[in-house]
Amino acid sequence: MFTQHKRLLAVALFLSTTLLLLPLLRPAVQAQAGGLAVSQPRLVFSTLQGASSATKSVTITNVGSSSLALGAPVLQGADTSAFTIEDSGGLPRTLAPSEALNVGVSFNPAASAAVAPNDPAQAATLAIAVSGGESLTIGLAGLALRGLSGPSEPSLQEILDGYQLTIDVDDADPYTNALGRSALQWGDEIPAQQLRKAGPGPVSVEVVAVFGPKGDDTVARFGWYTAASPATRNELFSVPREPQAASNNNATLQPAVVGAQSFDPGGEPFGVYSLWPFFDAAGDEPRSQADALNTWEPNLSYRHKVRVYPYRSALLGDEPNAMCWRWKSKLAGKITRTLW
Image (tube, rainbow, N blue to C red; front, side, top):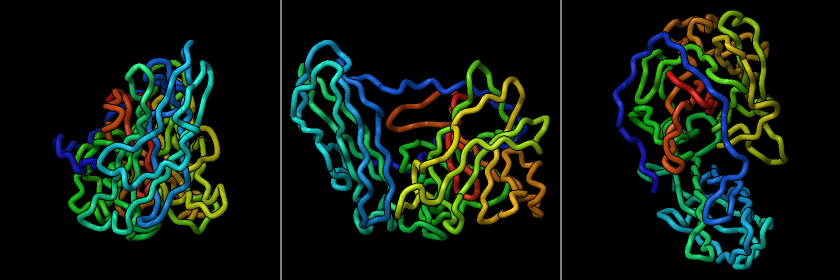
């Protein structure tokens, strides 16, 4: 089982600083196991405890010049009982060069998976034997949810653990979702009042999770602004409430988004913001990365709306020059790559 709450770094003091961003460089197909490639190195799930998630699939492609014999997919690891292979892709079978297949998995956490002292973050591995003695492995990460709104939402630490990120937010009680609203820094949080792109190409954004009200068709909007013109907001994408029938896109890991997930601010310092229509129908209360811009918040000590952490993954390893950020209203994401 994935271990929570690693206390590795001292609490960071919040200082004014600049982060440097480089473009995201990630191949669409990632090769491993002697001539095979997978569409993604892990599948990430979240669903209510005692329920079953939708099936997610990984595409396996023979990118070599010879046919390969693949065995039946099996689950390995401490939390195999929480995952189910829904589609074996016809395995075992031989995969010819350039041929591909899909293997589907679902997440089925126990009814008490998210009740203390149980760990709601579940992890396993999908393994497939390959001719020649090698093994193809795809990581499986799941977060069991106590509920979808209010006090039953997962804490930030649980979200990060469910995504298999080894980031410590120094949460005294990770089974509650309250972390505090003051400008004090906790755990591995780093200072980040503005950013700057360091190389050619666009800045890329990956949405890790969203947990917000379901009362509006749009859960959240995300955008960026230059430090020189913070009042000019450039919206990038939105998180819709229900892009598909009966979905809970307002309370999930890896939510669906509408819009672009990359932008190019040029060489100017910039920051990011989010808008939450349920709380701010007029759109005049952006939760900005720079505390000084959140003047709509009357309490000065509550103007720290964005928390930023170095991006570290238990499954994929540390990713240099990347960071993970979190808004108080529960939008978590990743911007790559950064220096601070």
